[in-house]
Image 1 (cartoon, rainbow, N blue to C red):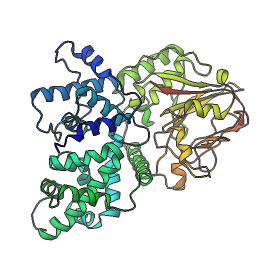
Image 2: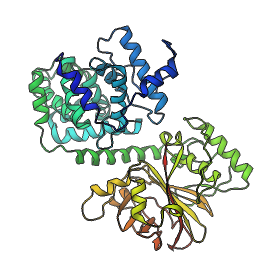
Image 3: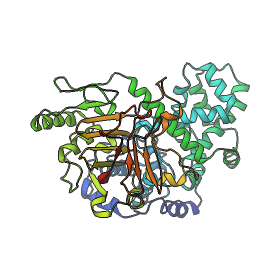
Image 4: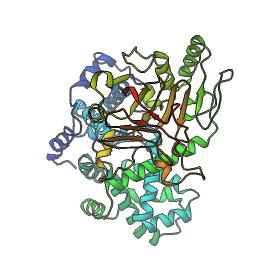
Length: 499
């Protein structure tokens, strides 16, 4: 673990994670802390202090960890929950200077080719369900033991990342991070599965009457792994059949499951983004699962939007005036009140407008596919305005087979703005009246067509010239057609990202 090569190796691997490898840390350090100051930005929302470790760092090292976390939280407000990040920063600082460490962590969050770290509680909670599903397939004996000896397997798998970053001895952890910086989160899944397989062979069979709950048994076992580090890593990479494609599918599925559970909870008046009830006194009408805001007057609308924005956990957001052809400033605030919290703290960025870039679907893809998420807004020749929040990058269409395949997550939703303001969120898997595959038809496309929503029709379907387009009722969002006629012609198509 003290090999001289590791310092240059980790730095070299990290430099390829993200193209924005820069000296921003020094600038932000001076801006936030001045010369030697210690006024940190609160970062408790990001990490899990209860389980995090500083891995033997001295006082100066611990202060540096807190500074890096503060700079990260200040410059990346969309990162709301990544519990192991404090431990990872502490480990990286053994082999990197603070600027390299910040750039590495930033690259881990922003890398587009693979997932390295969770950005929010949804993805973190989904990861424990992914680990549960993987254990069913690759570590059956341990999964059966957990099922027999715990009231909830989800509770046990909630700590799966901590088996590595809290319980694994330091010399093992360093070897794991060697591979993790190269191959991403798949390595962590491999390592956790290998732990469970070893746990099954040694702990479960040899001492079944320890009296410890599975969480404590696994934690105790990880502290004293009965194999050498090189053999342990070899065992993790000897697990056959585990692919990134499988992990992506399980992530999407389990995020949908969690979103579906969330939609079944009683929502507070401020939870527009969950399709909840409107505030008392708000003029609404209900048709389907969407949330409707009927505008009685501009002043009343502004008051309602302001009240809603202030009630959001991300605080009040002031949006700049955007020079676009499809949305008014009031429209922007309505859409922003419906967004997931991590996107609602960002500012809109106009990527594509047919008024300037031409009516070509290929151009739309080229201008927007590097961004995730995006908002598509359509204004028809009848001046009706509607669109969709697209949770995934349109670049994912290239990863599909020759036939058009759906991708995306349950955060995707539809909306109409004119003549009525209405949101159509994903209906989830909990609807017995819709087909199972229809519940996950979020986004699809190729060079000749762009599709959002499915099951009985397409909510939005744009052709290659953005002229002969169509909107229909779908099972994915339980929406009615988004404009007065199912066949429509686009007057303006615009795509926005977040900055």
